Image (tube, rainbow, N blue to C red; front, side, top):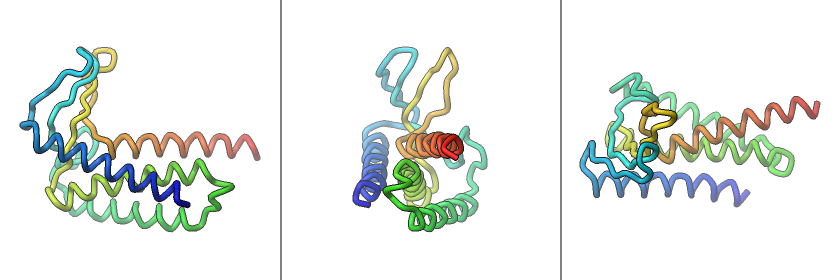
Length: 152
């Protein structure tokens, strides 16, 4: 169980520290190239969700995020860590990511985004560590579900 708690805590800490560094050291819109034409650190604020949808709907985000957090915590308490290790890791990443972005929304009414990628010429929406953790968690859940179906 300590591994799961560590994953949640590390996700939140990495997310909040990186967002703080970007928000305190960069101006909004400032971009630092890491790998030209692929990866940049770009200071951005998002008052919505992915791709900027639902801009300014904070009450919606508060309610949805609290519901997700509650469901994930209840789900985790009902799992057997030895039997469901990968699902627990996936849920820990989802929980950490949800809490990381929730903190921003409560404190600032927006989320600090900064990971800016260009993939095959497409300027992918700017995201952060919490978003990454959420996506990785969902992918791990899908893989776990597929493997579970194959086992049955």
